[in-house]
Image (cartoon, rainbow, N blue to C red; front, side):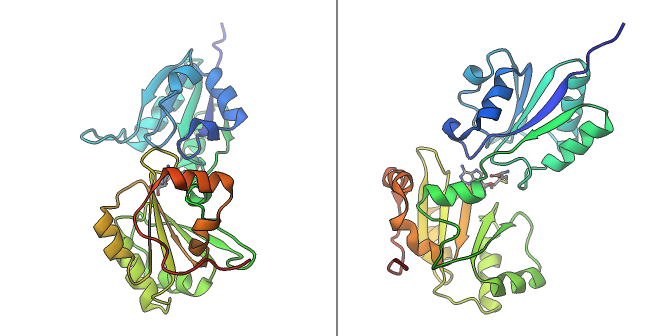
Length: 266
Ligand code: SAH
């Protein structure tokens, strides 16, 4: 007798709004027997999106410990070996600071078929929700996405300060003081615009504006918390000139401080 092996699909869930799931993500969820989901993945409508699935919350919740990474990997493999179609639903894109690579390796080691459905990353979409394009012909021709989870080394800060373009920091709220002081130490101008966009694509979305010299005061005053995306660069000045969707999103979001400088570019 042969037992059918199931499979694992790592699905990028986008920044939180179910409208920003891909068609492939919706199809994978509809066909799932088991869904393991994170706090930042769009989970409020999961019961509708995955009507046949057992839903397992493996994310961090206040007062609860998250399930450790090796246990998540063990669960993925276990359910797949039992024959289930397993979806691992992650926030944003699975391969942007999402430990997706580790989960793919765990499946391969166990001989479980695995595929990846990319997602809309918060690194680009959350700034967009606040009207900030990460590139702009006249303001920035590159963007660098950085994890602020662990403190940056002096060498990394020096490189970042000298790169130009836009810097997008994920998981950067806790280490923001050392990041801003480090960038200033390595020569970034104190009037470089900075925006912090909290809880993108939710009804609590809020943007706090400042510049390299003032953003710590502004964020303390506003009580900024995670999850948030920090954007550093001239593109922040464009926040008020975004496309129609971004402007609508901005209109629905609280804005604590206006950008210091007038918009750039045509
Ligand atoms: N794989 C994810 C990122 C995981 S790291 C992606 O591609 O988006 C988690 C960090 O992403 C958070 O600490 C925060 O910096 C950012 N983030 C994710 N969703 C967000 C949202 N809706 N609003 C603001 N920040 C978000």
